[in-house]
Image 1: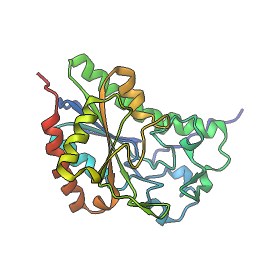
Image 2: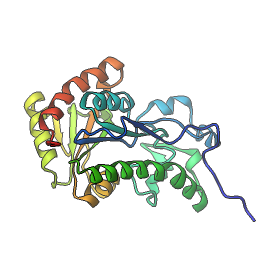
Image 3: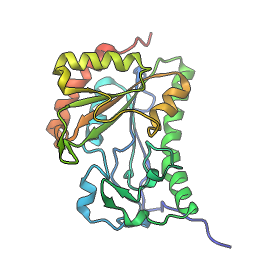
Image 4: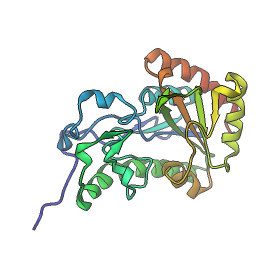
Amino acid sequence: MNEAITVLSAGDQPPVIVRNPGARSPYLLVGDHAGVAVPRALGDLGLPPEAFLRHIAVDIGISGLGPLLADQLRACFISQHYSRLVIDCNRDPARPDGMAEISDGTTIPGNLGLTPPDRQAREEEIFQPYHDAIAAELDWRAAEGLPTVLIALHSFTPVMSEVARPWRYGVLHLHNSPFSDAALAALREMFGEDLVGDNEPYMMDGTDFTVPHHAGSRGLDYFELEVRQDLLETAEGQAEVAAAIGPVLERLAPSTS
């Protein structure tokens, strides 16, 4: 009888990081791609160290921005410890790109030829605990009668396919979010229409998992924010972005009374 495949061992960190659990702010922040770690059992996925400094492995700067915003807003921030190359927590794990074999032209050797048990182990040990933590916080908030806007934090590359991206920020949505509309208008008033993308540089569509799964299924409003990565490369940059975005969110916050 074959032994069950496991990904995490005693020496590995838990997959979920929760900052300010039980915070009563109207916001719940999440970071699907904040982490860059790889479980010991998977080694380096066959990649050189510099690959883990790229957007294919991590949303650069979100591990710093998320806690800053959470503390400023007195909100909970739930983030993933492991790299999106291990499993992408903003994709349905049944999708091929949930454990991508190729990402932005780079082959991921450790993801080639994964068997169903290989995929199941990553889903059960890394993906599911992260989403269970989000669901548990939302369940608690609902039981407490707290209004909730789900805020998903991501970052994007300044250049893709040799094309410069002019936006500082992007607001991603499914055209069903009054909060996103208000945040988009506020950010454009602050930075200018050309620097804040409406479903740019990406559109929220069928590939997204976290916001549709958690907010959509509960009828919650949401805000998916993309920040250009060069703005978040340093601690100083992360603090500047938090100082700019935080007051906008404070102003738009629904009442908790």
